[in-house]
Amino acid sequence: MEQLISYFQMGGHGSFIWTSYGMVFVVLAVLWLQSRRFVRNSQTELDGLAVDRPHCQTSKKNET
Amino acid sequence: MYLYKFGKMIFHKYANPTRFLKLASTIQPWAAAATIGFLLAGLYFALLSSPGDYQQGETVRIMYIHVPAAWMAMFCYTAMAAAAAVGLIWKHPVAELAARATAPIGACFTFLALFTGSLWGKPMWGTWWVWDARLTSVLILFFLYLGYMALSNAFDDPARGSKASSILALVGFVNVPIIKFSVDWWNTLHQPASVIKMDGPAIHASMLIPLILMAFAFKAFYIWVMLMRIRGEINEGKIRALRLRQVHGGPPSRTTILEKTTEGAR
Image (cartoon, rainbow over all chains, first blue to last red; front, side, top):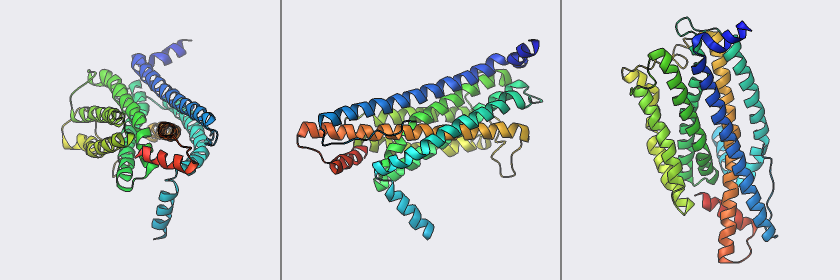
């Protein structure tokens, strides 16, 4: 247990280190989620427009 | 010669958004897998396996995210400026969309480089921020990304927005070599380059491995998210084309939609 606490304290600099890593994950996760939402919303809107005009086909692609 | 012809063929082939999307669908899952794989390996080495520094102690672990984020900040801007140049000169529609897709990713990496640098600076330099050449030029890079994004969305006509922002991206590119060489040209608090050097890296392999792994993870993440955003931009172009048709009347053909998509991107 003491070893674990000592590890998280990182020699007294834990707050700087964990805040840095935390911010990286938050920013990259938000960017990924926002990009995914951007693609999904645009695809839904495009499909809706294509339904209004059936002669115009759109294709759903992989949104990995 | 053959290489030139091959490059030209690829260049023209993927100017077609539909063809580009097929290629993107193949690459995206691989980029996602590479991101997760490199990230897990990089975090293991960065937080568990690598030793502390003899001078900086455990704070050296911030380097494994700060340095790759700073590399990506400059890489993304270079990629964005190159794509903007290709879009401006050859009217390559996908290149313009790639520039637009790269901007928010580059802005995020620049913010992370500044933020983690500040958190590293406090215990090492005793200050969160100092107006030295390296830090100031990276802050300017962040503002250039924000300016690019604001300008590209500032016009009702996407073609005008794209042109104006492309010019800004090209003019702002002068800042990239300034960032790289700022530590050599001026007397700064920031340390000089220790990895990308003419005489090889100056850091031990135990620290170089997590650094490289995290750099690969960030690069793969960039490819993954950029392709995702280009897909969204292509969809937006198609929506604009369909809306234009609705306003002006008349049934659009698939060819017309694609033409309008590429026009919208210009």
